[in-house]
Length: 205
Image (tube, rainbow, N blue to C red; front, side, top):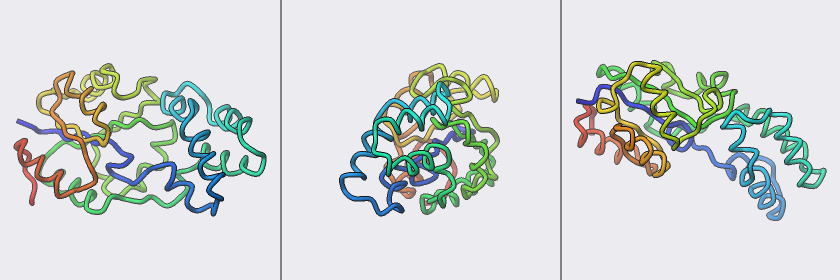
């Protein structure tokens, strides 16, 4: 019987893509494409999630690959993209709160940098979470099976009683590989509700 729901954050609780973060800057198509490639598409961003590079070192590395007029944007996003308004996935906070009210344990497992704990309270529904596991703190990233094992051990959870929700198929596969139940979130909360109910989780349609 499922008694615990584990959520990813980006593209599950909030909308998060490099393109969304760049929207506010009014960039040319060329600069927009360049930053997607050099800021979000190179090694520094996943290294921040892995906890193997500092914010300052990551920003400097990217700045060396882009024109000077983009340096301010790079530094602003690397060291504080979370200062932008959060963009909650509609209906997700209601689902999280309903699951909490129904007695389920609620946890977060996110590939994210070391700042997550400072901004997570701004996400609607965050008050319901019983524990957070952040990849940068663990020096492990999904879908490495060790991060799922660490989650289970840290919070005393039983894999077969957990249901994991992530937008990445490979992450869900990784969770299933260590015994968790789970599904890929494809943007529809109503579809997620159906999948949860099919797994025996109590939630409304």
